[in-house]
Image 1: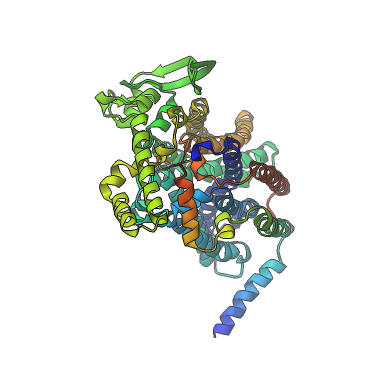
Image 2: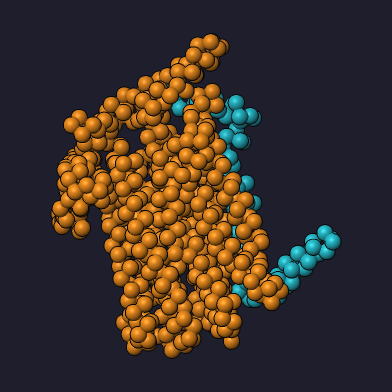
Length: 72
Length: 518
């Protein structure tokens, strides 16, 4: 029965995408391009998480911020 | 020193965040409102069984789909910026910011993958009532999704429900409900979502007006204008009421922002509301270019006092009272707050030094002192002032805040009249004869976007220099990376977002020209 439900859900999405209108296809191309630019190009090359990429653990991250907040 | 952080870096980081947020906000308000209008139209279809309403619903759903698809995930870039450009801030806010954003993410995911799919793919595959339920749930989900973002923003405007832990250098949430139901959060949610409702109603009326001007889709246009006018009128009245309440909250929680939105330099009892004001190019104060005299000012006596404190003669503090203090009215000076802030920073420095020296007992004593309620209420509350060397830095751009506020308020008033006019012409069956009104309706669409953006400028520029009100100024929050890197990504975003916006406008205009399917 579960398999039947999953199959129906899959079929619902599959047919929906298959029968999509032309504007629907266009915006899906834009969505996919946008997600690629955002997560593959921008996130990887331009927007690394500063604290995660420069420090190994939360203790070090906390110490770094504490240092920034209390510099004489 | 934190005071010595490169202001170019701070300004570019701020500009980049503002650019991203403003572009993101082009797409969001339409989604918030049009989903409800669509749900109302579909409800009529399900109730009456009239296929014309189904056609109308599907047409506006197409425009919603385009807007939603182009705008989806543009807000995630803001989260990227938190991690890269604002790492001190991201760490300092701890789970307070993380929890609402995580809830928003889950909400958005389930809503987008489930209910919207049923909305678009489910016609003739699920029952009418199931489809209608999915449409309503999409509308409710979109607005609840906004709730969590607005709760996070409200916390930055008025930090509550947390305690700072010096050991982790983070604020830790100790009362979720206080964060969720803070007066600022409630006001912000109601006012922001209702602004989205108004914008969407104007969008629907404006496009319908275009059809009437072109003598096309007359039935669709008339029916759409009727629904949007009713929804818009109720929403615009609600928008004015929530705006009024929001202003009162600002008067008590962010008095400097309140003084800035009215260009009030010297506090007074029975303060007048500046209905119309134009700033001169001369400076009131040679130390601060933000302080400018009015060259023209039309004031309504006592109204500002009533607006702020529901008392016609109440004292409303001005910029100078907030900087220099006012003993008579119990207003602490910025100088005193700076002293207290410096004591809080010094205590945190002692804690850090004790920790570094391996003096655990002293570190524990200092930690207890910092986390003590009296210290939190009297000193840590002003922590951010400890990084301010000149009190003039505490004054936001008054002309920008003033003009943005007045543009927003004037347009808000205009929208109420516009909806009344729309309703009257619709009910009297005079829409097609009033071509001036139809043209006005089309030109009101950009005005709705202008008002919406102006509202956010008031909210965010008016609270400068704070990233977190009284706790963290922008120059403390920023990551020490190169300003050049931020400049590069600023222009990159400007390009990407402009392409996305152009794509949306192009696809949407084409769909409007094509019109609904017959």
